[in-house]
Image 1 (tube, helix red, strand yellow):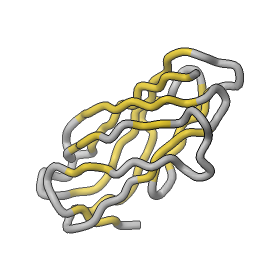
Image 2 (cartoon, helix red, strand yellow):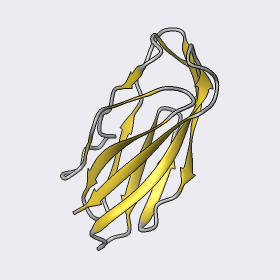
Image 3 (spheres, rainbow, N blue to C red):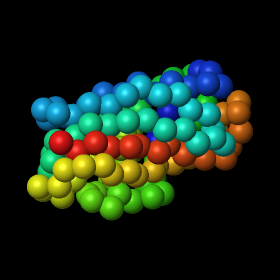
Length: 120
């Protein structure tokens, strides 16, 4: 699936994956191909939480993949978004990273996004 993005500094539009769970929230962030950035997520213990990517324009996103798995749960990447689910009963901090594969005005190296998760 190809998604076009209009500018070099791209802002991903974040939205909770359906169905929305209580305690699931994410922060907006900006990224560039060839760079690393970070964002925050808050998730309920054992509950699925995530966000979808929304973009348009001339930059092409060819896919998403998890590049660093969390220690206390599972991270997953789909064609349009990423998500996280902790082990039931776990509360505390966790982290995972995903890559956006594609190309744009800033190059064709993957963008890496670190997600710092607070599990409540």
